[in-house]
Each structure stands twice: as C-alpha cells, then as structure tokens.
Image (cartoon, rainbow, N blue to C red):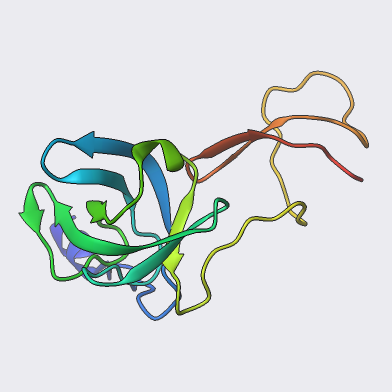
Length: 147
C-alpha cells in the first residue's frame, strides 16, 4: 500500500495561468488594515502585485501575503492565504469576489454565461425561468435559467 501511495504523482500546479483567488472572507485587522483571505486556484500572488477584485472592479496593491502567520514571497495554487491590501475598506470586498492580476487577464463580472450544471435536491421539472441559487467557488448568488 505504501508503495502504491508513493507512486501517485501530485497534480501539477497551474502557476502559468492568470491569478484567480476567490475570497472566502475579508477581515479588518488592527494595525494592519484590510486582509482578504482565500485559496489561490491558479496563478501566483506576490507582495507588490496590483490586483483587481471582480465583480466590483476594485484595483489595489498587495502589501503582504501570509499563510499560517508566516510571510510568503509568493503564494501558489492550493495555498490558503491572507493578503493585506492598500486603501480598500473591508466594506468594499466580500466573500465570492475573485482577485486577479490587474496586468494579466484580470477577472471581470458577467451578466450571463453558459454553464453545464448539476441540480441538487429539486423536486419537479426544471425549465426556462427557473431561479436557483448558484454556488461557484465561494460565491453564493441567485440566478435565472434562460433556456
């Protein structure tokens, strides 16, 4: 069993893709400021980067990045991190927003999109106009089926 487990290769980390970091929460820490937290899904987050938060289209600089109370020079996919941002109030950011590199394909909001979905626990028929709650990464939002 140990040999079989040792033979399993870890998945490759998508560090070459644009940064995508869905926010799990946002804190205001005394003496530090606004600290969004979340897991890096793709790309790399570094201190000094300029990030954009979608869908609010807020752009700011990352002052520092920490994981488990230790400063990082960079955060890679799979890392759960907190990062301090300049001149942004905790009230301007919320769970479900996505942070990305403002210089490399920044994230943006969408009024509509095409998706393949799995519907859980729904009695009856689903048709045009159905309005479920969508869970996508950390976002939890009402939507409407167009077709």
